[in-house]
Length: 215
Image (tube, helix red, strand yellow):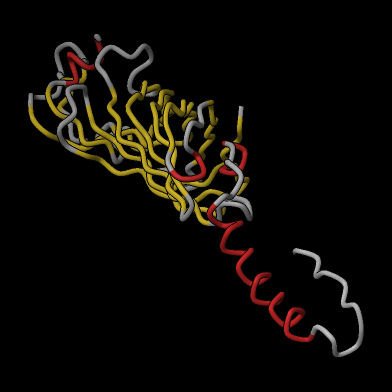
């Protein structure tokens, strides 16, 4: 973000425009922003029922497919991970200060495999502590090869000064709550909450690491 400091009043002023604050695409005036297996049957005798016994492997071979079609429902705990990496990126079309997405691909448990997290949210006007604290809310989806969950996301992004002149901030952490309201595939009917805790190891970078835990 580039800003002008008033020599007279010593205040930070930003003209109404589109600018960037530590990876946040800010739209409008910051003055406003600051305020606001089956068992085979026994064979009766050697060689008497080889044909019947020989049919069983074929029947047995059908079971894996049947099992796959009737897989047990998964829970949000299957989407938990202690090793999540991704990036935060600005998006347009937000009615608040800035639109932000969090995107990550990570390993869920063996029941679901790779999971892809995507959020779509906004930073509203009037967050107390802005710009060092930014409220965040929107929607999310976590997709896997066996189904997906979606719902709402809410939380906050915590920032730190990256430059005094010109003044700028960058994210250092984010704490998000994902509230699942619907699901598909093995997640059909799944609801509940996931907590996402993220850290940005390099100040001024939008790359993050973190965890996803079931509440």
